[in-house]
Length: 417
Ligand code: ATP
Ligand code: MG
Image (cartoon, rainbow, N blue to C red; front, side, top):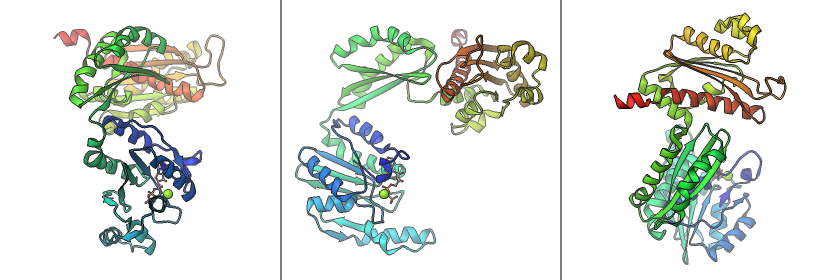
């Protein structure tokens, strides 16, 4: 149960439950219900009473703060009919935390030290509010603070110390293959004959295909008694799909495309410079989302107008006149220009029509030319993306990253040497 009125607005989304359900699955809990409820004692109490009739475990996050709208503790205690005791050690710890930051603890913070009688306190290394563990009949109840960076380590500790042995000894284990550069239908046509029979083998693997923008994910799930047991089944399955899908699989360990590209650049000791037009800096933003990217990203320029391409990147005006700003020769000249300026081994140029205006019959909206240069190797391609403006931008960045990834991949010849 995600508690917090802000989670019922369009401005905040409950992400805690994604983490919690994933972790619960790994120890074999079958998640039957998840809810988002506002900071309201009546609704929360009703929901709790109902869930107590059938659930073995109820996890609540949020609403453990010191203010009057933080009602989770009150609702749970009143439903279970428990009085509160103030925990002196917790008051001292909260006061100490304030003192260390040169602040004075306010009286209302004492609320966070109120413990329903019989509850166990769960330590919060990253915040003031401790969590609570309670048992009522056959149901265990866990209360955790809302902020994800406080909640996550606390939930990990509860999972390890109190929940792992309750889950029935079997867990759901998942592997994710990430694929780009090929439509979903083609991926499934190749993959289905391989994963189809796995659903009926001795330890079945269930497979889900998930297409998101510019990327396809294959989720393989198996039930096993241990991580090792799961690996024995899922490991060969992942390898079989990798063989069938070849270079289109860019990650089998959850890493993002920009991380894979970053690792390849680092490994090869290469630095990259980027010249972006239609992506407006998105490609560089994604490259620099990766910690440590200063080790291989040299610079980037957004050259949106023709004049900027001419002035900053040395793209010849005649080239733009002759081929148009969205063309392979211009993308290549952009990549060459930025690479020369930066003195890097790798240069990327992206130019396209993100729309909704600006399309022509021979260059419709979604036409994007991308050039990637690495040493003496050059790849230049024109793509035709569909979708709204931001979708074209994202797919352009995705395609540029993927072109670079494929270029940096050790070739068969390298492997043989
Ligand atoms: P605090 O002591 O920080 O007040 P709290 O337990 O009262 O802790 P909340 O006030 O409910 O927590 O939430 C604090 C912040 O944590 C919210 O602003 C929200 O952004 C984030 N948060 C709360 N619940 C969730 C959730 N289910 N998913 C993602 N973020 C959440
Ligand atoms: Mg709150």
